[in-house]
Length: 249
Image (cartoon, rainbow, N blue to C red; front, side):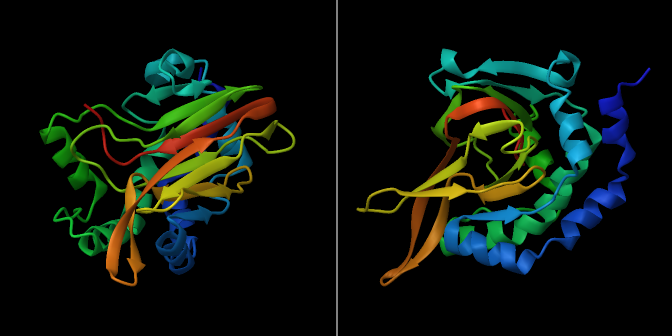
């Protein structure tokens, strides 16, 4: 018998997920990505979908590996990488979001003088990853409790990297947890790091730069490096889904 969580996750037809992604104001999101390296995509998942995804965490049959952050100096808390086949909601979000972010990725690379361009479909990009030995799925489910945090980092898993990713908050701030803000830092050449706290509600997503992005200066375009993390959870439990578009070795 299917679990209630699995029923909820399979109840949203692919066309509904794709329509939700298409309904986002991508003009505004693109302007925010260009200006700040991050954009909030409001209401990407319903509360029911959020709870159903979070409820998958104890069932190891959905995952290929578990990482305890403290063992690796990543912070405190833990996460699990999904196995293929991905949960239907994640499997539909990945290509739908990629299709909307691909033009930004290609434009950024052109501005930074990077020759790499990304194909029209996510499936074609995954074939590129898999041909290079990057065949392990990277979408992940993160779990934090009071006192946990995620150090600033970049999710780079091999030679082929899609330059944007998406994190979706599954828990409700103020009810399920306190603290635990999503944080970005941006390091510009010869300048101090600039922090950015990104406010998210349950079901909201942050689309953001994985590694670097172009910034227009007085002497032309230059690259800035970005890292992301999560501040200390003060109470409760916090779950997040990370949608990364490249696969790992």
